[in-house]
Image 1 (cartoon, helix red, strand yellow):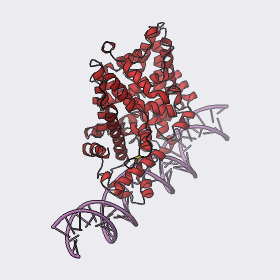
Image 2 (tube, rainbow over the protein chains, first blue to last red; image 1 turned 90 degrees about the vertical axis):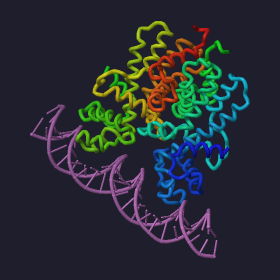
Image 3 (cartoon, rainbow over the protein chains, first blue to last red; image 1 turned 90 degrees about the horizontal axis):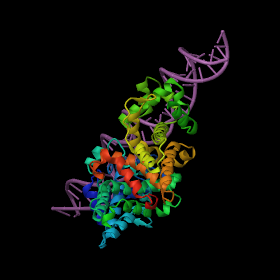
Length: 226
Length: 226
DNA sequence: GTAGTTTGATAGTATTACTTTCGTTTAAGA
DNA sequence: TCTTAAACGAAAGTAATACTATCAAACTAC
């Protein structure tokens, strides 16, 4: 599991200057970075504060990441890689396409409840970061460059996989990619709304969100295929 | 039209320290602010640069807005107020509920093409800001406070209106609020994807996005009502 | 013509976002 | 065990940002 993650995050997305997973300090940066971004929010989080917390020098952190934006991209990438792994696991060996699509949507849209750490990262804190900060990872003037560098690979991959599951149920679906990215991103946004702007969702949205997205997707399916 | 906007933005959402629409300098701050945020992106935009461009003092700008985040909230609020007005206009006098819902979705999701300025603001620049920066307006540690202050009123109102249109077609719809906010926010996100991460949408997404959202919504409608 | 508002100019502070240098520690290899 | 390179910590420095405060001039309203 950890190995898969490392390969995914490391090899295909060189968002870092020096591989943080390769050293003790690097791992502590990730671990404490997740905790602090979760607590303070990205704007209030600084490398200075992180360094103080780790009793290390700011300059040491800059050896791993150019800036906090790159650290965020790295963490969000890790998050989606983990979800990608989970998606593969949750849909393995399911022959029926419709059943498999339903499981895929649930796998992707369900909140992270795993207690404890995955590798050394606090998964639930990472999930909260993904919900509230991930838009900041790609909504910048630098998107196009970062996209060319492959920074958003894991997000793209999970959308692609969901798209393939949609197409396996309805090969003639008119907009599978859009539907897939809408489910992946939209489920995060809806979690944020449910928490902070609850009037924008139903009262039970929190509990039923996954089912609502399942319905949403299946409703757009070509009825002839079913 | 301008009057309606002023009332909406001013009275219900005191995001500013001093009403920028009431003075010449205030209006120039809004006008040039839109241009510069569009050009530079929110991160590179500063009150210092804006002041220089306006040949005024930084401190004069701080008299109107606490910080650039508040200015962004103000502008996004203005944007959604304008769309709210347009929505009311586009759906006026349409008796048939289904027809009206379709028009509502198109009204909300279509890109802004209006040439020239609305009041003194460049509407198309404002639209680009809404597409690429609006997540930053509410995805912060301060959301809850700002929400209580009513900062996101116009966004909420447009979601509410769409929700009502959905309910008028299918009063038993299980998740109208979620669907509405997903259309409103999702259409902006998809525009961003189409522009910057095109592999996440279909090739024709740009041209057909509105139709796709219309299909999405109608597909989830209770067939018995149709 | 005076009182009040609005502005422009200047200055100043705290923090951020880095960069550079350098001596010490640690690990790895031969 | 000696050697060499990598990694680290400490310190110092720079440029920009995000403000705040003060004050005098201008303009505006009664």
